[in-house]
Length: 304
Image 1 (cartoon, one colour):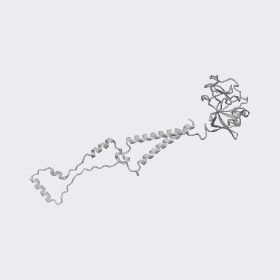
Image 2 (cartoon, rainbow, N blue to C red; image 1 turned 60 degrees about the horizontal axis):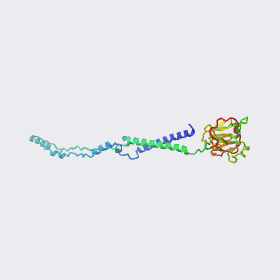
Image 3 (cartoon, rainbow, N blue to C red; image 1 turned 180 degrees about the vertical axis):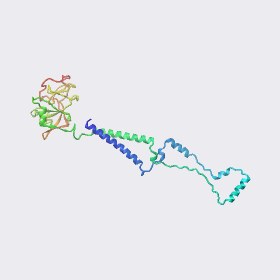
Image 4 (tube, rainbow, N blue to C red; image 1 turned 135 degrees about the horizontal axis):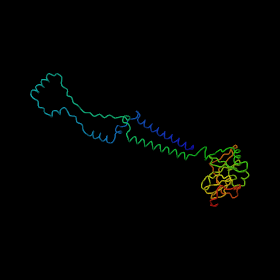
């Protein structure tokens, strides 16, 4: 996994945690004592509220004490006389008692009512959508944001020029390009005496007797490998061939290999991978090609 991918995963995890944290904070604030409590009816289902309305619509009538007078009670003369005697003997009046039915409605707090099913699914859906938007936003930002330092597209220090010159030119005089993965480039020698008679004079692609060739074939973008036998670059995809300084030699490629601007900074070679320079096919070649048998057979016409 590359550094960019690790960064995207880490930022995605941070955003996800932030979304969940914001959701928890908002939920707790909604239940804080300082805020007014929501109505107890919001936590009830539709069927319960309907049943409550039907119950409230039914009138509750308390039976007055005088209603007992509607019913005539037959008493015997002996019972009436006993009742009169009891009233005369009693010094304290008898207080009439009446039972009245009272309906009390007590509202529940949000903590007591809890979260109903609709609220739970609404909050879960909102949290999921927020996390999805956050992760996609981070991915798009990482894709569009320019790389300010390091990696392809920036200025890359590929090493000391003196060391590179000894690496790319062997003791027998043959060439062995140095491939720099971070720059996606081959570092090859380019004699200062050959610049004046080439098409690259004044283009800024040669520094300290070295040049940097882009690894991609200009035909269809295949990576072009080095052929040690012929001392050139030969594309196995469609047979395009270039000499060791990247000049077109054969195949369907429309131009020379692309190359990067380079600079000598205090004896170190700096490859500016953000600046790709294209050049047309060279009429007069700078170096001889091939210097030996080819690694591939030419399988495409020399002209496009």
